[in-house]
Amino acid sequence: MEKNRVYRNKWFRQIVLLGPIVLTLSSPLQAAERIHTAYFSPAPGASAVIWVAKEARLFDKHGLDVAPVLIPSSVRALQAILAGESAIAESAGPAVASARLAGGDVVTIAGSVNILTYYFVTVPSIKRAEDLKGKIGANQSPGTIADFALRISLRKLGLDPAKDVSLRSIGVLYDRIAAMQKGIVQFTVLTEAEKPIVDKLGFSVLLDLISLRIPFPWRGISTTGKYIKEQPDTVRRYMRAYVEAIHYFKTRKEETMQIMSKYSRVEDRNVLEHSWSWFAQNMPENPYPPLEGYQVVLQEMATTNPKAAALNAKELLDTRFVKELEDSGFIASLYKK
Image (tube, rainbow, N blue to C red; front, side, top):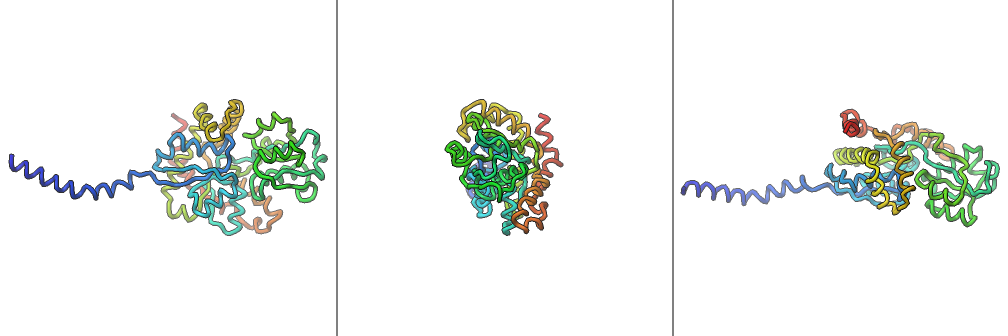
């Protein structure tokens, strides 16, 4: 009996001594890694993949404590990545290409929407492309996706953006629509997610870029080469959560619409259903960033910046993380459930 008591006391003293060491070693393994991730559109749509990953606790599932932050510009979202304020974040092809041309260490690791998803809309009095000559268009800031969409639209309509029209930087869609309503400008571009809103205002769609299926890195996930080198496991876990979120988006309609409503503050069910339906059909299961889309971006940029013609689009992409998930069968397994 005495022998057992001495034995128990001995182990109790060891546990007391070792306890703090065990706790110190185990705590970092249990704590989720905290990072910020930027998204740049408050409209219900592609940015909802990040919202879903957060709200459905898919980031948590893969050991990440992710804080989504709205930065309403693809250019500014990318600046946050380069500044180290956002480790992995949403951005778009034009911003990525511009940053690389300026020497920025940035790469795209995923693409959730890989076509140009814009409509070119005008006031009702404009019926033909010729009617646009001499008119004023509402543009977003230079280098944004809307800027590219507007210029590509004008070229598709046979017009020179620099000579045939005037472009005015006004800002986000709602500001541009307000300018059209007041007669300050006569045309702009808007996305699929925003189309139901402006349909009610009676604006005309002069060109449907979506139907043309122009390859374009409209929405993707980017980070820096330095971050990939230093934190490859974090990037892998982020991407596992991201591809799971795409699956959730596609297969959990009601839950996804609730999440979209929460973040976008849109309560109109018709708008939410329209957005969910289109994006569910057009987001790829294997979200590779589109090489051909980046080539389109560089070709357009080369019209004003000769350096763009010399840049290889492959340098803007790092597809290893999506490829790992595809090759391992991880993505395929999600859709077999």
